[in-house]
Amino acid sequence: MTNTDKETFEELDLVKLLPDNYRNLKGNEVIKPSDVNKGFEDDQLLITFTGKDFSFAVACKLEKKNESFVLIPVFPPVKISNRTRSVIAIDSDHVCATTEYYVIIKRKDDDTDTDVKSHPRVKRDRGGLLMADGQGRFYYGDGDCFVGCHWDGTQISEEFRVSDRRMKFPQGSAIASSGRILVCCDSSHTIYSISCDGKDFKVVHFDGEKWFGDIDFNSSGKQFFTSFWHDNKWPVLFKYEA
Image (cartoon, rainbow, N blue to C red; front, side, top):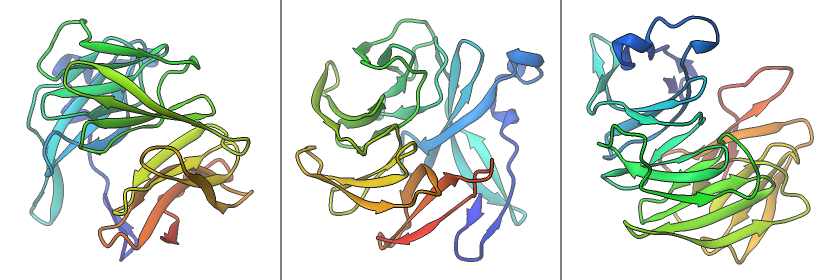
């Protein structure tokens, strides 16, 4: 947890969110946290844990007790029968994940290996950029493309696929209050602004020394924060005026 105004942080123990039999694995069997997103409700977080050949998504609430923050699980972990770095809540009943060959959607209460629906990826990958807008649309990175899809509760339909010579490996994205989408591109050191229908897009920031990662807006919507790879480290935040 980071206080962006005071530039302080507090470490939270995430291992306790895993089922008991997955907490003390050794070697390449260890399950590690890989992403955090909005949960099924506004006051929830959905944390992704990545294992050797499967993943978990744990929905929890962040509460403050005795001047410290704690995470309280609110729903049994959702198991994804493949290795992925990112799982998101696509609506109040379903999760969405990017796996090696597909983007999949399954019910949050489904403890089997049966996926509700899947959408094929063009570029083989094990996850990465994945984001939902809360209105039935989700977005993901597919190689050097940024893809927008719609989920109507039963079917997945691809709405647009953005590609550009300066769009290299989309790594993070965020939606502004205007509806436009900011997309960080790792390999081309660029940040794009894309319309919600994918028809209009442009580079709004370039820094050849930064390998951009995740991105998000602060509560005012006037600034956005992005992490970037530099000197073999991931700085917590880099602040820009929106």
